[in-house]
Image (cartoon, rainbow, N blue to C red):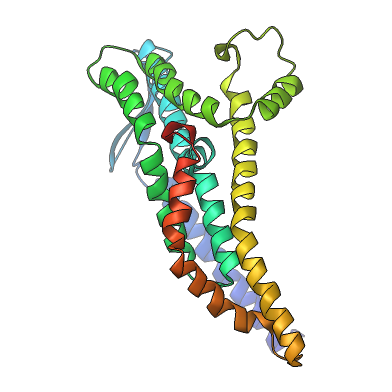
Length: 278
């Protein structure tokens, strides 16, 4: 004899089977709501339905080639814009100025004063001040003629990079430049025009790092003297547990203020560039 549980399972199975058959019958008898038709004139597929007409047109005409070139050009422009901060940092005076300012803060012993936002902002405005002659040349040679339609974008790029190359050639050391030229395997260099930009940029960056570290070393010397005097005095007085930096930092700040340190640092950093007669 069949148990009550077996009967219940059979009933549930029959009900599910009946519902499935009804749904399948309804789907098969339902009117078609969309119809696909080939568009022989355009070589595409057109789908008509309740939501309207959707055309999928696949053709190899010149309009699509132009749109593809435009898309690639826009992608290139977006890539350059995303790399713009790195380009500004690497081919301008920003690197040297920012490193020198960080050396000043480290020599004073103030950990977060001035804060990083102030240091970067000051470095940006000093960079704008130092690079103004170069920016003016770029505007005169490339931006204005391109806006007037006198030259193409490729010619504007070539003319606009020349003032930046002139600035970098003024600041780069011959030793670093010869190093990267030798690594690149470039021979028969007669003038600076024979040196490509991708060789000039790393040589310029290394030269900027060297100049910044030399300036930072000179800034450190008077503050190291103060630290040595304070630590020797504390040792002589037997104050072994008192950190010398706690006592020396106010004296270093006082010396920096009395010597008008910020003015001296900024003036010498700006004049260290050849475009300002350094």
